[in-house]
Every structure is written in structure tokens, then in C-alpha cells.
Image 1: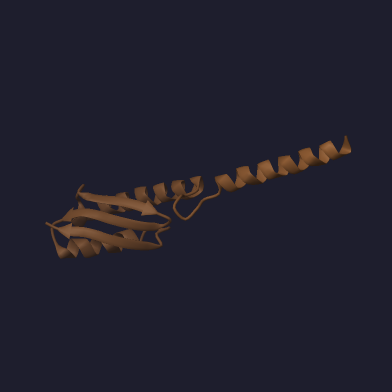
Image 2: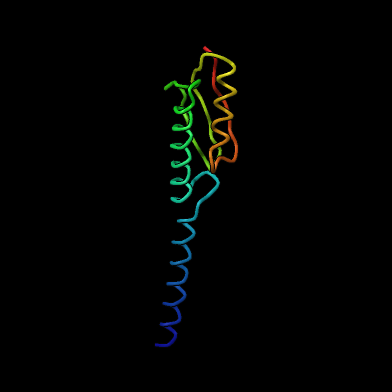
Length: 104
């Protein structure tokens, strides 16, 4: 009977370890907390871009992954490309900015 309990304990431990490892974030997958943090950063960057008088455009798309913000879309001038990158970089929580904006 004692041996049966030991086997059950080992099986339970293996099951728990497997479950927790399956929930861990990998390089290609974000944890829930990271996803929420990135959503907050995206919202703050979008708000900052809309508040900037020289960038009042809805043609800028913002995506965030692990604190790196990617800007894409169209703007009117090269100065707007630079300004959008500066505005995005000034938002709290942004680690890096990948500026893929295009001048139309």
C-alpha cells in the first residue's frame, strides 16, 4: 500500500510539472501578463500619436510585441515619419520602435 502512495505521488508531481511547463511562455508566445502589458502600450502610443497635432491621422497602425512597437501605414512627409517614431519612443514601457511608416 505504501508503494502505491509513492507511485501516485510521483505521478502527481510529473503531471503538475508538465502542466506548469505547458503554461510557460515561449519565445514565440507571450504570457497573459505580457499580452496585457503590450495592449496597454499600444493604446498609449495610439493616444500619443492622436494627441500630436502634426500627426492627426488614422492611417498609422500600431502593434506591440514584448515592448517593441511597430509603426506601419502612411503619412504625408518624412518629418511625420520621424515625429511618429519619436512620439512612440517617448511612451512609458516602450523598449524599441520599429518605424515602417511610408510617405505617400
